[in-house]
Image (cartoon, rainbow, N blue to C red; front, side, top):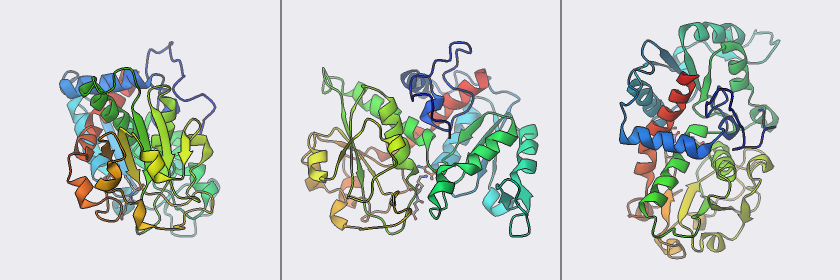
Length: 342
Ligand SMILES: NCCC[C@H](NC(=O)CCC(=O)O)C(=O)O
Ligand SMILES: NC(=O)OP(=O)(O)O
């Protein structure tokens, strides 16, 4: 993916837009705080631009399952007056080929080179979800699927989670932290929130994308938080997304005085796609939360209860996962709105 422009510092004065013309990574955003503000304005007044997308269509293509992303993006589009059509490519479409020059004698029936321009002719904005294989790191980190789709569809593309990143989730997470800080402004007078991303156990190897993306956005949200990542050794994330993060292998030390704890499992990046250790003591507990400043607990969901996060934490007042998932609508609405205005 193009990562040459430093995240959060893109200037798009010529268009006045907050986005480059797509939304697949933090580097597509010129001003994170302005996008967050826009999302919170939609939260306060969901229908204020209810005609902006009139007579326009947005296509949501899923190569993998979804609950929140699918529904929140549809709702966001409809709030802007757009028609939203969901297509579960994995279950209902022809199996797509993404490899350039492929001899298609195997299981794939249609090349993205043929399918994407057709979808571009049906829709004004296109969105796509493509998970990584977790088999070949170079293939996953080349973001072949979404890149090929962007190349051939000729429309603004929104990532609904790709092989390495999940920007709608991360924008939502910045919105949720901003909202919490604004609501408790007395607590944060003269100091930045301490935000800790902690690895958690899981039963199967999961993508790194939610963790990569959260870290990328926290680093791009320059100077707004004290950001720490904690995980067992061997679970290092890709350096390109953790530039200004502090890495701390001792979870208790990391949790000390935290205001927000973002819980997520991911599989190994270096020896790719594996579970190296699954120490259940990494699961966050109420006892561990005593080290924090009454930290609010976040998770992108879906969450494996009592594996990744305990009932006692999820059902306590520490948890803001429902508020967080609710904010997915406003994140999507701000992004679609910016792409419609271009
Ligand atoms: N879209 C949000 C997260 C998606 C994915 N989680 C999962 O696949 C969980 C599957 C399970 O728990 O069976 C991930 O971690 O990247
Ligand atoms: N958090 C998230 O992306 O959820 P879904 O996978 O249900 O869309």
